[in-house]
Length: 545
Image (tube, rainbow, N blue to C red; front, side, top):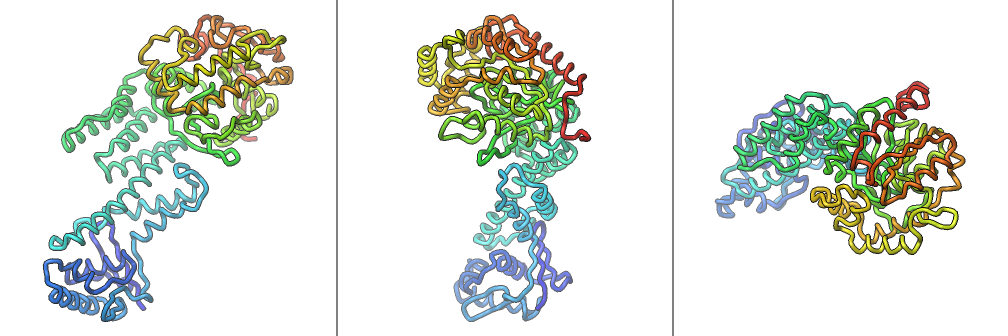
């Protein structure tokens, strides 16, 4: 039995036993393609109706008989198995289809446990092979004008393959960008645009990659090309996300405004979302406040600038804690042990050996046990606006009482989804409509009212005072003097109970670290990181250990 090879990406090509075959009839080729692609028997009447819809049944069946005979003449007796009722390719025929190999390559990752957007290196090899197979669209240039049913089948078959190719190219672009292999990422993004010239996400990917590699002029040209194509072919203007990306190119800190790609890792059975930005010598793990959403943070320009400046001096690692943002939701509040395990999972996923932890607000309740228990992974600790205990009592006379806290939390949950509590978190911008809109949107994206209720209960019950005296890593405690959310005495308490901690009291009333005068905050963090680097207390996964 011989071997039949069909190349169906692009103009169809047929080989039999390694020799190119030129079939004499257009519908002979269509029949062969249809039988090979569908991989099952078909009744004679179904094939006759598909290929000769304008004929009556008798003449359509006669045309099918002539075509079946022509296949035998051109390819030999062993290609088809024909019965009085059914037609199929012979079951013993060795068949090679590029579309079949493409599908096999793309489905290789289907049984893996990794998230769809975080493929293994072995998956990448297969996906690259699939991209190489996709020379052009399915049966490009081939058509049967007098067979609408075949034309419809060809269209939908081709659209499915094309959509899968675009998905792979988007995934590969993102994969290489996350790994910092911008040359490969640009190659994939360009292929993506070749296959889909009107697809804005592909244009945005290429604009972003050009910006990341310092090719600002190329990024601007790509934006102009996108704008022109959309206007000329679709009568559309670029999406606001494309416009926002373009405007960021005009900002002196534009590279900081480019959204980093979100990645996933597992901690036990929970998927955690994280991002990295910057390429500094130091890894800075940011442990955020009670809610976050990695995509939404970049929609607040001042917060994006704050993180951008940090990424000039460190490789910044951001993540959504379990239960909020893009990380898995939880049925019950996370324990301290789970929070610490999650932070360690993020450190490993980011390829770090040791990090400096930058904790804000209630993130201190994670950072403190992490630093105390794992000084092998934590080279230093920066705490801003933090506290050692959630509510006040006789030996911790700061903050809200349990009853006051409960009333505050109940009001927050009742008003969730609106710009609630800005007067405490950012009093200097409490009436800023842009910030109010962003904060309301952040709440709705980050957590449901029920989820935030459980988070607030966890904050209420937190108490890490017993760990403070056991911290042995260099610690910087920062607090604004007029903080309306966490009183300044909380910062003073932390600094006085952590051995050799350095305490800096900053001017201002805002609790949010990126609001108000951020210059003193940046200067203190940068000075601290510089001192740590000089002391060689920091290590990276790439170092020779």
